[in-house]
Image 1 (spheres, rainbow, N blue to C red):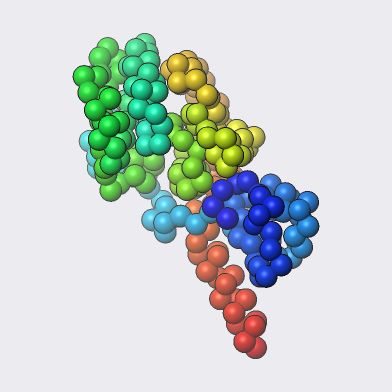
Image 2: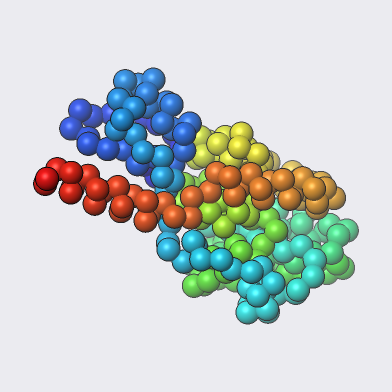
Length: 241
């Protein structure tokens, strides 16, 4: 399953095994009548690259980010462009030394909405479009701001980076955001105007950010894909024996 929610439509008698993102998902499926011995908590599979250690300082040096001070990365794809601009404008107005990296991906509309913005004061702005080193950037970041898609949440947690989730879509994204907040690995907001306030509060509490990083490490599953593959092979061998 690629989201942290468990829906009754996923329950089917012909399914031999469920690979789940968390123990919470397993508990929900048991309540829906799924036998516990069919449930395997592995995490959502992510690229093998994410399981390899990456020193934040090395990733910053590789991509021209400053060695000192907080790095905040905002992945804006899937968020209404005007709301992204509101967040960026507010973050640029903070009275705190930080580097804000915005990633617009393939969205020309989102990139256009950020035109005219520039770093000033103590805030440096780095604007990126489509790029091939998302994992490097997550490893280099002190905080990631993003939507609550199951894959991006899993990738960030697997890298042990705290999350600030904005504007989750009702349904699966709300479940994903709730899981992150409940686990203590991040927080969620609905109003983009609140993002700068939340970021400033987190930066003023380094112990809280450190605890969020610890909690992200506790619930992240960087080896999920390998765990699923091993279990599938074991099941096939058992069936053939």
